[in-house]
Image (cartoon, rainbow over all chains, first blue to last red; front, top):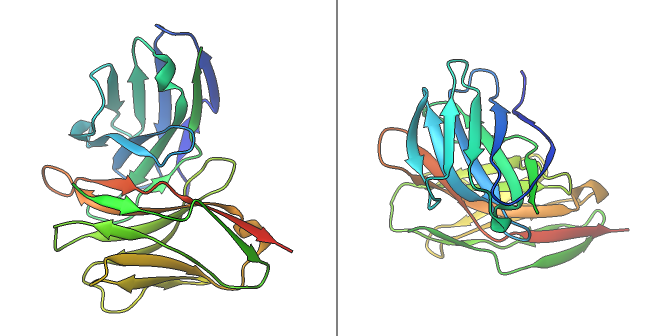
Length: 112
Length: 118
């Protein structure tokens, strides 16, 4: 069984740029959630995708957007990057109706 | 809104000893789920254990057990026979339903850093 994978591992961008982060869900999982973890804090929910539709969103501005593809992989896009967007971005997958979200290794984004 | 509180920023434990990490929660939903995750310095969140609000018995997974006290709204993680590899951040989280269907999100506490010493 393949676990959740994310790419890239690390990324450095400058303020105002745009970034795309990618996530492949665990085999058989059709739901993907994205979280932002700032340094020294717990993860904060960004949004969740189920069957290619966004079905829930946290308190993040519209410049955070996402996609889910037919193979259940997902992208997180952030436009107009700000310094406060520097964080670890975690992707988690789960099976519809199941309880547990399984996380990937994360992408560490630094905005200069 | 749900809330998770972890009051121990850091804990030390000697190898082979047991340690308890505290977690309290606040919710008005009668149905909820509580999770513990381990986050090593590499960053990946590793699922450890789950407790459902209607589960009659405390959850156990190998060396991990969850001391669930519903009336006190606490869900403490107990790690028995600590190992050096247990040194990491530990997060308590609660599942919160979203708008429709089976959609849900996790609300996390601020974490406890556990250091296992020789």
